[in-house]
Image (cartoon, rainbow, N blue to C red):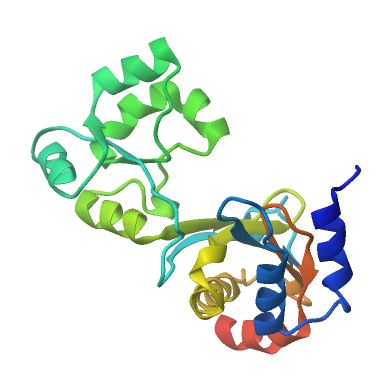
Length: 237
């Protein structure tokens, strides 16, 4: 793959493979040269085997400064729960009519789905459609709940989900370049603390193997993964 001049110039800024987190984020900001507000993402390679159910790593965390993205929330609910969802700021609220709209019109003008438990039988009808897009409500991510107001509030405030993929890597966005270093460092710390606390008991050896931060259009910048080894062990206790 051939990269442009801006990307090549950014690569030249990277002088080592073990930056401290604060240094890596500051350097990543220097590589954010696009005309739009680039997103910063962290990729964490974990010492787990995702093929085993007892080594899955998945959870959610509310970033203190949000993600910088406007999130459109769809809520599957009826009765009082539907009213509460509307009052809490959900962008779309409904039941059968939303299922029909998604099925019939291939409509996906939303980013997150929340559902009350009693609606999951209905939502299951479109599970094959929502699942591949990462939109299926799930209790583990807090999107299947009776407390729809809190779910909506957390999502709008900047809740992100982290989940290990089949290659044992967690990819999570944690803010925009316009946030500046201080806010990005705050978000990064909260996110990494959550990932480290989620270490499965069955995981052996080094848990955090590598940590790489990058902007939307920039190169990956490797952090000093050893910085997180002791923290991960302490968090798991």
